Length: 244
Image: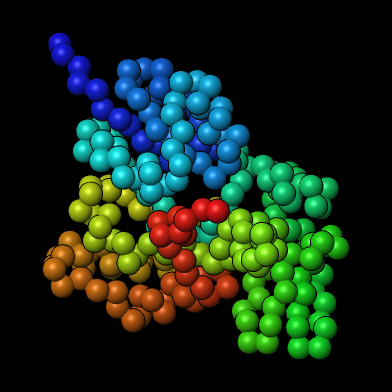
C-alpha cells in the first residue's frame, strides 16, 4: 500500500499532550510539527523526532492537521490562559517558594499585596512588583505570568494577557476548517460558571449551524461571557498575537 506523506500538527504538550505527541511521532510515520508555550516542552518533543513550529499559527496553517486525519480536532475556545506545563509553574514557584501543583493556586493569598500610591495601584507577589494600574484600569487578581514588565524599553504583558480567551469571533472559521469540538475551561471553576459559558456557546454554535451566512455574535452572548471573563476582558490570544 502506498503511503503519501502528510504533515501532522500538535498544539499543547502538557501532561497528556506530551505522551500523545510522542506516540504520534513514533507510530504515524509522518512528520509532526509541534508548538507549546514552554520551549523546554518543544525541545523534548524535538529530541523524540518531532519538528518545532514557530507559533500556534505556524501549526494551525498546516491544513493536514484536520484534512488528513480521522481524529476529531478540539480547540480551546473560552477560559483563562495559562503557561503552566504539567501542572507546574516555575514562575510562581520561584517568586512565592510554593508550587501551584501542591497548593492549587498560582498566587497564594498570603503572598499578594496591594499598595496604593496616590491614584496608582501596585500589585506585588511576595514583594515583587508585577503590575501597576493607573486610575480607571481594571485590576485582576495578580499572577506573575499576567503582569506587565519592561522589556527592551517597552512595558507590556510580556508573557500572557490578563484576560480570558474568547474565540467566538472565530467560530465561522473554526467550523469551516472542520474543528469538531470547542474546549471550555472548567478546572477550578464553579458549576454556575461552566453552565453559563456552555449555554452561551451552545446557543452560538446552534445559531451558526442553522444559518452560517447570517451568523453574528449577539449582545446578550457577549455580555454573558464578559461577566465571567477574567478581569471582564477578552482576548484572541495566540489566534491573533505574535509572540515576542
